[in-house]
Image (cartoon, rainbow, N blue to C red; front, side, top):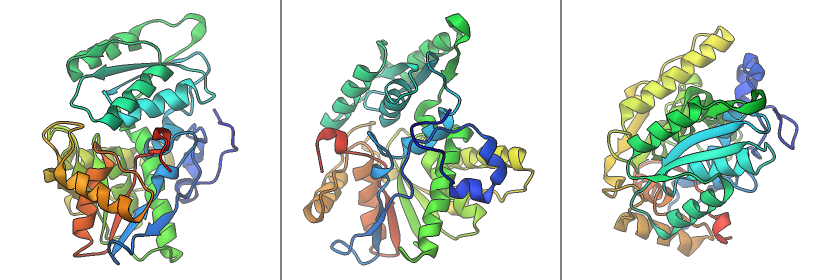
Length: 333
């Protein structure tokens, strides 16, 4: 199902024309800009994916272009996420109130939160149907499974979207993002970075970027700043998700794709504050430094932690920070 804009050609589709048959809804405005942060480091750039879509940008809009492609008005869309999940907010924004007219149910569980995460949770609740808040992720997933099995009247369907949108179908949007970045590099918008730093939650963004760089044979390391427990934020999980996406593309196109290996993915475990949503001193300092030279707002849960890692790596090598959080709904810039 198409959104308000006509389906635009994407680097992913131009590289793999057979993927044009995959349903997609046009949500984003691509490519998103790349900006050099000279005031902080001559070796640091930022990819402004916070500006990827209206009314809500960020990395999740890219995945939802593919995940919501076949959703029809009246369908039920079920997903899960921690309190303050930007994925849950994006699903509620685009499936429920973004013109698709789906019924959105979000299974949330309690976590340590920040003021920004609380705002995200409040907005998600306002845009989705009322659902209980659970004590643990297990309870939320059980509830979601039950919702997925319920019958809908009139032939309407139940659509399940994995936490973070991190399924091979959703990762296609992040593969496209990586190919988009490579076009910008080739056009001279920035030199080839040695590393691209992203927040690491469910791993979809990191997996898609790593696969894009493997497809293009570019020696760029994707560095995930872990913001979730280690059982979720693991390098092996990112690699498996990337290679499952490679198999999806192979099945659709008949082409053989390279595989993502350990040398293309790194995880910075020290970013984790001991609980999802818990601010760290390094993240607070990094957000303050960026705020001192720009009007860009970072959140404590995801982007500030990743930016702290990017600042450190930029002292040693050319580094791109991928801004996945859109603060505009908070009233900033």
